[in-house]
Image 1 (tube, helix red, strand yellow):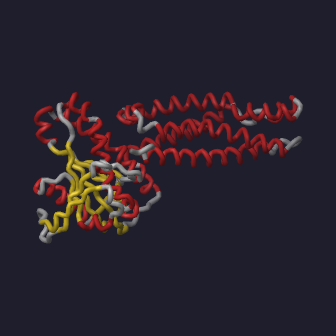
Image 2 (cartoon, one colour; image 1 turned 135 degrees about the horizontal axis):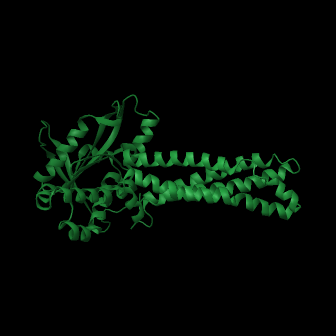
Image 3 (cartoon, helix red, strand yellow; image 1 turned 90 degrees about the vertical axis):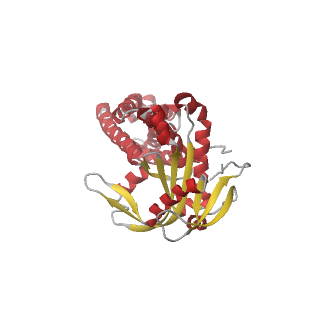
Length: 370
């Protein structure tokens, strides 16, 4: 069992790093402001550091804490399903209220004033904390920054945080060759299910499957490349996916998440999701394409071959197939049962390919701490 989900640990670590940076920035700004007090510049700087760091931790800690830790919760999932504009407005109002309270209440300044009152005369302490800038100006500038930050965070969730980051920084503005794993996860039986419950219900069915799969994918550091009908395409660079056989562990973690939700699926749709999957790895060309809409895409035989392997899960009557090329690039497969199926002919390919069937061992059930 995971004592703390890997994705949660990474979010907590990110929050601590950002809080640390906030303390430093708040301390520098507050210290520079406090050092301007001519009667006691050193003390003013020290108390300014205290006040600036306090305000920064309260604001950034609360807002980023919510952004980092809220998404995996039920409230976070409800916000994700809401329209973009609704989520944006709700967050803006909640975070804006917090900003008003902090800027108006000035907890950092009050703390500094209390400390100064113990060290100086009350009049001198009060003089150190005269508001230099109008609160309306502070609030307006903070609200502008908040709106921009929320917009970018929401945009990252729409297009993918890594994709947005890579496009903004131009990582793939010029195409490059990369070694990557691709995991194709297919929702078996979705076509007859659509005939039975209708297109609207099957859309909700698939949407719930994809939503539940997102946390395990994040836990094992995968990146959703695209949703194609009833299929998820997930990718890792070989460097990211090698340790702990993350793509393999990810598949079984997704299966576990769906198994836990099976009663809800049965109750609402009269069916439980069943998965088939294929994993392959090798070199691809990664590059940015498009005009009015930019995207990062992958070209190469690896994509087509992974699709062919996934189709072979039906012919070979195996749930999860892994190519020999992917197997050679993985490490730490001891927690999984591997069955060597030898060379197999794949549809549309002249040459046979070495294929393995992989299953979770009962003792670990595919769950590993990465």
